[in-house]
Image (cartoon, rainbow, N blue to C red; front, side, top):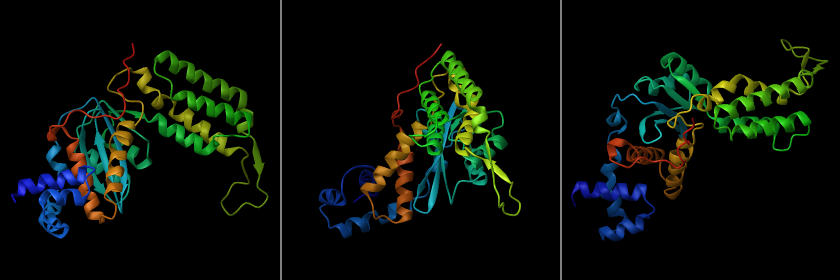
Length: 298
């Protein structure tokens, strides 16, 4: 059988819902023969370098996904995947490896991981950062829980939930005013201190009594402009979150890996690369998104 046909069957099997038995039925061979015929497909070189075009994009979304013992750092626009890189873990050094081969866009949408931000500030210093609102909501929810006991925690959780519904500049100003009023009302509560009678060496002799509520507020306060940037600068190409990657790419990869569970780590990485390449403009696919494009605002 010609190699091109074997490669098509291999790709169809990796990226589809068919089992190995279904593909074998088409070959009319045994499963062992099928695996022997496709063995050379696993040795194909990485496709990441084939999609680097040098094109400057308006907005780029970046995020990472763990595959076995490695992490795949991915960059995409609202339409296509534009780059990826395999690294041991997320850090400023490894994020720099991906970012430095891509031209700086006008905007970058990210979850705000510390190493990622350091790389962005170093290599894309002129790029405006839009923090993912959904990640901010998750972080605050983790600190406050869904059922805070205090009135301050309950109100702050409601304000954070409202953040996900902000679309226009006027709504953004109203949200910031809500956060300001919350602080004026509860600042004495979140600044309360508890004395530590037996501090360890180097520790303070006190701590904030309601430090989780205070931490949740400070996160929102520090990131308020980054979180609302897509409302202050209305642009249909500037998403408010990383759902284009989380829902449009990462969740699909996880589904494929589940369909092919039992693969070695090396084969899982090849499957991921095949899928990412299939979602690039070079592969000739239509623009993809599992999330509706943000509505245009005026």
